[in-house]
Image 1 (cartoon, rainbow, N blue to C red):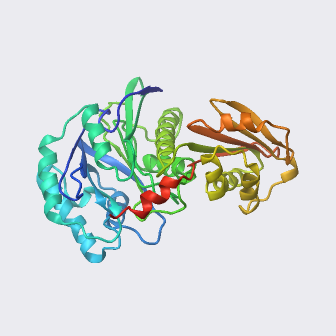
Image 2: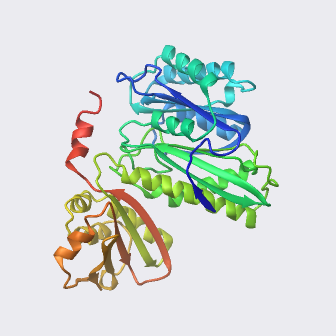
Image 3: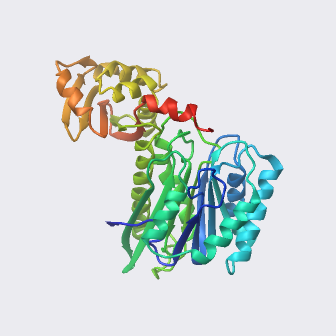
Length: 408
């Protein structure tokens, strides 16, 4: 697998476009589209929040129906959540507008994404205007993909993209992705909006199985603020234009595809965690030598969601008691008298706790290690061979400022 520069327009046959349609008041881009030259197999995972935005309900119907699609249209600024029948009507009208503009695209298979403020209705006039601008302007290449990644941002500080190539059956296959998310991040499926494109030829059922499995160890293992969004969506589109022999069963070729998908999704979810609203550091928690995978995941997730721990990371304070406290109330059983804790970053590695007791560590050295943009808490349970990793961020003054002023 080769890591390359690019995003959703890097695989063969995918183009993208973006524009300011008038949904956002500040004049920044607020709509994006991804268009494939040929219909794609689709897979998706969606929020487990009982309150589901209209585009989530719409996209679930499209993905589960088995219909192929050529187009995804996304808006930022308004979430189209808690909007009742009118919100679903906006999805229907949007899909019809896309179907009119994109050749051979049935309205009932258009995929739709929305992100932004919950509650307001999306006005159709700017949506139709945006689609009429974007379809003829859609372009191949990294610039168009990057512009689309910027257009779906809300409180994100930068666009989030990743791309890889790999071989299946002697053919070069490409996979690219983009996502957005900085707040309302505590997924119970995935997080916010993520779109992955690939030119791999793969059976729909295997595409869905790979996505549903990978999401458990990637997007479901991040948290910024403990809030599970109403709009969480991850979609994968595969158009088959790489020309590889179709992947129809599990085996070596499926494993290569799976590994690429895992890499792309892990990188994207870390980008979201590290760009949490107001954040200055990506906080990684890795639990090793656990009895079971579930035990490791519960403990890691508990630590990254602890506000006291997140505040300590912001202050570069090795307040390890907050970490073991979060482990203790997680609900997972473990032996604290056998637990080790290290802090790790590009600044070095330092053992803080051995067998549940603090070491004679240097506070100055610990602060140096905790001052880097990525900090890892390595927790060794010494109880088995299972492990899990979770990602979050520090909790800063700016988090409150951003969310106090979000609608204004």
